Every structure is written in structure tokens, then in C-alpha cells.
Length: 191
Image (tube, rainbow, N blue to C red):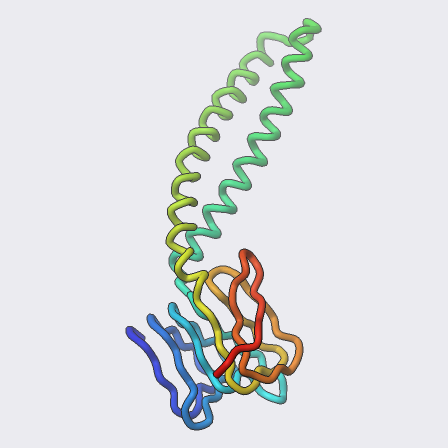
């Protein structure tokens, strides 16, 4: 849904994506079951259910940016692992060369390793600014919050941008869940 979503009573077992803020603070103001995500802030009276129904609620949710960010991080990690293995192999080759134990055939493999190291280094150099740009885009979404006015039950998964927190206890509001660097935390809040 484009824009903000105001819920009077219930969102139950839905898969809802809101491109704006989500407020369920009038009437029952209850969200449980399914997955409810908003690109903006979320404010709700009650999240989850006494039966501990799995409920996922997210703020600062931009799947396109988050997915591209996570894929880019993973690609850089894999490339760095390859680079480490190549560098270890080249160190060993250098030692063997000094000892005179490298054949002409093995020199061809060493050259291939050097070329592969150059290729990987160039790819990482291209991915690093992309990752920085994606991280900058996520900065605004990481500032979003989930405010619970009355109660949150166990088995509620909260997401802010690309970070996740599982609530394992019944908590009474008003409380606000927010992102503190790389960890979702909560604090008491005034109404």
C-alpha cells in the first residue's frame, strides 16, 4: 500500500506492506499473526497474542535495499575469502620458488593466481562504493521505531531495517523499540 495505513481495530494473519507509517492505535489496535511491515514508523496498541502466535512486525522496511545490501555484503565476504586463499597460495609459491622447487608448469598456475587476485581486487573495489551507497540509503530507515502503547506478547519478531529482534516475554507499554547501532533495543516511552 502506498502512503500511511491507519488501522482501527485489527490486522490479523495478514501479509501487509505499507510504504509509509502504520498506526493501529484506535479501537482495539491489535496486530497478530502474519507479517506486517512499513517503510516508516509503526505504532500499535497490542502486538501478538496470549497464545504466542508468531507475529512479525517491521519498521524501516525496504526489501529492495535490504536484500541488495545483504547480497553485496555476502559477495564481498566470499571474495575476501578467495583472496585470502590466493594470497596464502602465492606466499607458499614464493617460498617454493626461492627453494628452486617450482616447475615451468607450476609457474603458469602462479600466473593464473596473480591474474585472479587482480580480478577479485577489482571486483571488491567496485562493490565497496556500492555497499557504502546502500548503507547510506538504509541510514534513514534504521532510524524508524516500533512503538507499543499497551502490550507486546512473546513470539513477536521485530525488524528495523535489516536487523531483527525476537521478543520472548510479555511486556507492557508504552515502550519503543529502536535500533542502537546494530541491535534492536527498547525503552519505556511516554504516551
